[in-house]
Amino acid sequence: MEMTAADKKAFDQELMALAIPLALQGLLSALVGASDALMLGRLTQEAIAAVSLANQISFIMSLFNGSAVGAAGVLVAQYWGKQDYKNAKRFAGMAVRYSAGISLVFFLTACFMPRAIMSFFTPEAELIRIGAEYLRVVSFSYLFMGISQSYLMMMRVSGHVAMTVKISAVTVIVDMIADLFLIYGIGPVPALGAVGTAYSTIVVELIALVWCILWTRRREELHLDRESLTYFSKNYEKDIWKIIPGMLASALCWGLSITAHSHIMGHMGTDAAAAYSVTAVAQALIQCVSQALGTGSGIMIGHLLGANELEKAKAYEKRFWKVCYLNGAINVVLTAIIGVLVYVFYNLEPQAKSYLVKMLIFMAFYMIAYCFNTIYTVGIFPAGGDSRYDAISVIFATWCFAIPLAYLGCFVFHWPVMVVFVVMCLDEIVKVPFIPWRNSKYIWLKNLTRDEG
Image (cartoon, rainbow, N blue to C red; front, side, top):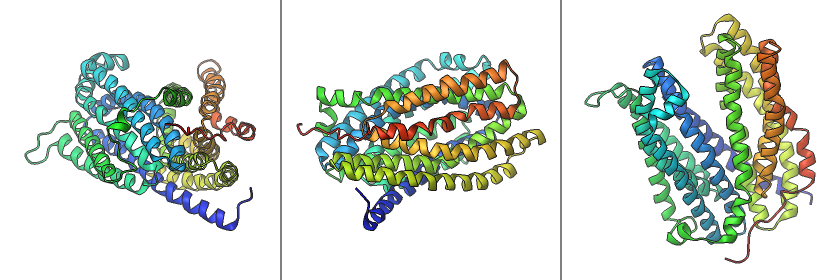
């Protein structure tokens, strides 16, 4: 099927309506963590280190929750495209149940075993004390976090992305104001230090959840009533569990790779570690566009597959390949702009700044490859149930190639810093040539919906 000029215009309008708000939401989410780090950084070095270590628990929880919610999102998108809102809500209700169960496990662990958790990450008594106190309080936010993500997923899939941005914008503002009062103490509010940011996190997550529930209650096709939340079907459980393992394997492999990257660069010297940390900040900001396009592509393709418009889905996929080239060019420009900003903003030693410039130059090429992998392996392929490919590609490109070679370069062959960095980041580039091969099999071109209830 060839796309007409009208089809291309409709494609562009739909993609921009999704991608722009999603990119803003990703940027706002990054700002929450950045504001916490900035305010804690002005408190004590121990406070920011302890909270950073403690938040590894919520990061791990987000990998499990993200897999469950993401798998449900694939099916919600297809049923929404089919205009079967009843079953779309049933899968959204399934996401709520799964994420609530996962969040409960992490809440109980963090609330009642905070010192044991902190002792796993550090032997420093002061960091354990601060981190355990923080974890005991912030664990209550876990109870709201996963459920709100389920609601936000349903709102994005149904086309109400602008509302999710409003929620994110308000929570960022509330978080910054609450941090200012609770961390430092203003007026009658006592200074709580690192624990203050834990209380602000609870407030922010509760606001997001209550807002989502109240907003969706006014819309019948989105309101998760008792039937949606309690509905059980063996067939539907089988459907979602065909997707969850691939997403979870991919998420865990990716999460562990982030830890491995930090471990490798941490052993390359202070200058290398500092330059890599700043590069990671720039990368997180640049990635927002690609991640938004990846999410948007998954939603658009999912809607078409659910509506059984398979030929149109194939035509959209071909246009997304062109979108990848455009996104790659945008990523290069963003790298140049953000690279200059971080170079000026961060006060680094001359050698660290030299590393930073070289890392950012390579990052421009890395981010071109990243957009192809994000739009296809994270967006289009899973939209049709092909969630395993992302996990397979990460296992082979990252864990069987890039990371082992980087470890050898760092600890055995003692390669220069930039050689180790480039090798460590080759995984995204190595994966790109295999995308057309996987795509040509059209494993993702599947309508996953059922006609029966």
